[in-house]
Length: 347
Image 1 (cartoon, one colour):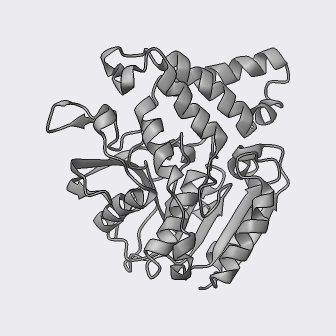
Image 2 (cartoon, one colour):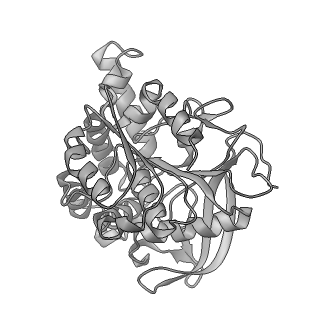
Image 3 (cartoon, one colour):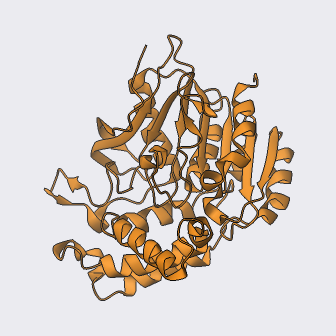
């Protein structure tokens, strides 16, 4: 039986010789993660919470900001994902910038950051890394794989890759395939690669040189995600609201590695579980936001028939929220009861 406290303190798990789908091998794999609650003796009460593209496990920290959804109102004692009942693991994804091995990590073979030599990876590689982490804790079955945005990609991938291991899938502001192309991500990579400081991805020799470009892109992304509406109550003055967005963007740009952003968006580009949906045995709770421009609610007209045709039992919720892509966390109250009931229903 594994027991942890509910303090959002990151933990590290190390493994060696991690082989990716491409055949490339990472000599060392470090996974930063949060572990909350207690794993039962059977090892089958675990929930894996998966973050979005540009955030990390801090999405569960009280008061934290997460562009793709801060879920502190959904995860914790007595909440929809009740850490008094579930053992919750929230890993930083492979290739990301919050403690898990990625392009900014040191390659033990060279003693230098991987940078552009970090191998191409897939969403499936993220899941295989996470499986090692769950095995470490003694998890025998997942009560649910849940997450917003890229976290939803991972939740779907968990369901099709390990159908006998995953009992439920919760996918918010997302889709079971990457919409191709998402113009904003194509523009993002073009903007990065054309920046004078980019130097073909070798900017690590000039620390901080890419931060102005990352900040500018982040401001645009946060506005597109719907942050202005989320901040309106706390910052009614437009100038103060703009200053807060600039502050959040600068903080993110100071820590998020541009090569990681390139790596993760390329992994997302290749994501598509449609050919494997018949593997999915778990029921799905699919949640989108009325005002999300990245994954607009009209997607349900495409996604639901695809899931149903594959024999997937799915329930759909459209959040009547003005918070856009942030809605699953910013307006958690709109669906927390539905999430709680979904996790309680027998499968």
